[in-house]
Length: 178
Image (cartoon, rainbow, N blue to C red; front, side, top):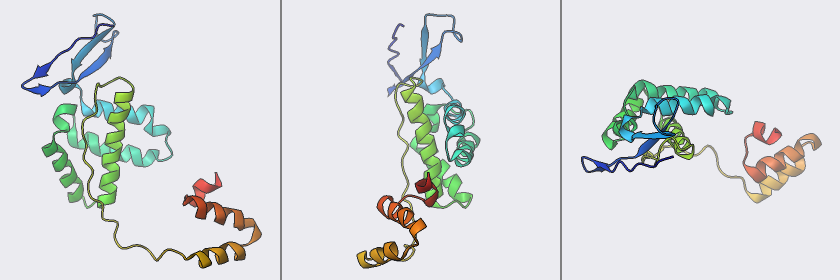
């Protein structure tokens, strides 16, 4: 492998992407400008190689679709500029999505870029900002210790262990059953 430092372009540091030899007839790897890699390729690769096997595959698929539909074939460098990301968030808000859902969509894009970096497909991960999530008013109030003790002692025998696991881990019931 020959590492090639491509330096700077128009005063902006350029990151590189490894392309396998079967695509390019040069040495083992050729480094291309980060600006030439489509964000859609990274997001779709993330879904194919990771997201479709995740527990939340349906949600990840929809989130990836939002990224691909909005940015199309834009490069990572162009799509991750602050103005473009702000436009993406504004677009999602315009579709009527809650801030928590928009944050989830942004999280999938972040995860795709992180995975590409860990796999050596990109040399660095661009910054994807988080947005402030409005969770609304809390549902109910926290239980007091006395109430928790009563819940455990009065639970039927076949549910007592489940109740203790749920209290101790704050897990979803289906996750605790696994």
